[in-house]
Amino acid sequence: MRLPHHAGPLLSTTLKHPSLSLPSEAQPASAAGAGPSAFRPPLLLPAAILLAVAALSFAFWPQIRWHLQALTVLMGINGDSIPRPLQLVADAPVLVVDTTIPGVHGPFPGRLYRPQGIAAPPAVVLVHGLYYMGMDAPDLTSYARRLAACGMLVLTPDLAQLRDDRIDGSSIDSIGDSVRWLAAQSHAPVGLMAMSFSGALSLLAAARPENQPSVRFVFVSGTYDSLPRVIRAYAAHREPLPGGHSVPTDGNDYGSLAIEYAYVDHVVPPADRAAVQGVIRARLQRHKRLALQLESALTAIQTAEMIQLQSPDTLRRAATDLGPGLDSLSPRNQLSAFRAPVFVLHGSDDPIIPTGEAAWLVRDLPPGVLRARLISPIFAHAGIGVETHRWKDRWQLVHFFAQVLRTAEAG
Image (cartoon, rainbow, N blue to C red):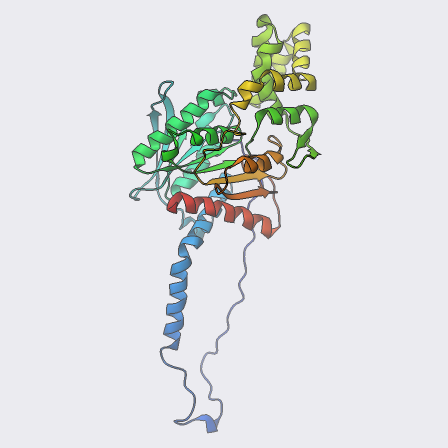
């Protein structure tokens, strides 16, 4: 998961409440008003009002707490400092422990964020995206810590193929391994939270019969429904929408680079692959200086192969040539047996996964599964990316995430 470092504060406006002025001492209404017949409010009325307010506060406190905790998580992963009053609802000490998860392809690393002093905390698996730092990504670790501080046991599995910027079925297997392992540790179904390309893989993992009993809910952000359709959108700079129309999309080179990285073997001869892959990998990892150095070392033939690999025609061929394999990595037409509640979040101007994919995904979910969907102008791709002064947008994002936290805790 990469969250933009230029992101502004999510919620920084301070609410100002009008003060209530009370008279310092009661004044008689009139001399005639004194005496036994004068009106006197019941002595217990103030106590009754306070009791009613306390009862209402108690009744609504869980909802208030989930919203305040949602705010702390969103501010935390955005890099904003958490005001001290808000820290009171997300102040559990967190113990971080590296662990090993047993898997069908062998054991693999993971990291547990365990809230201290909380018996049987609700548990979630938090899956990183297509990013070379995997579970060590600073934004992911901040995300996990903030969730744990809210009282959740968080597992972040480290998935080798996603670390290597590759999308394949082994990651689906490992996500399922992580869910079953954490559910066994916590003796209860667990939440599954994933972003970007791993969101679709997590939906596929949760849909498998052997994993369904272990999944409480799935929350995906900035993910896709059909990978071939996404690739064609990269090539055409247009994204199709349900209903038969399409809209232009500028896109971002990161998604295209990931597809080029997977398609190198189809375009570049074996002798040149390592050099070309090195350039693409450096670009994916945002090592600009290294990418320029490696690119300058390419031969003329390798440079031509690199240009060919980046052409729209090559992307269109990739969608066709890789089609059957890409279909197996897409939720499209594979969620008919899905049972867990699903939350879908997408940025209205997502630079990597076209926003229309959220609409396609919602359409492909079985009836009754979708718990909430939000297309937000604040959300960039896998995190907060746009500063806005519209309270409606901020409130919608906080309320959406509060629903996720409620489901994680209460089902």
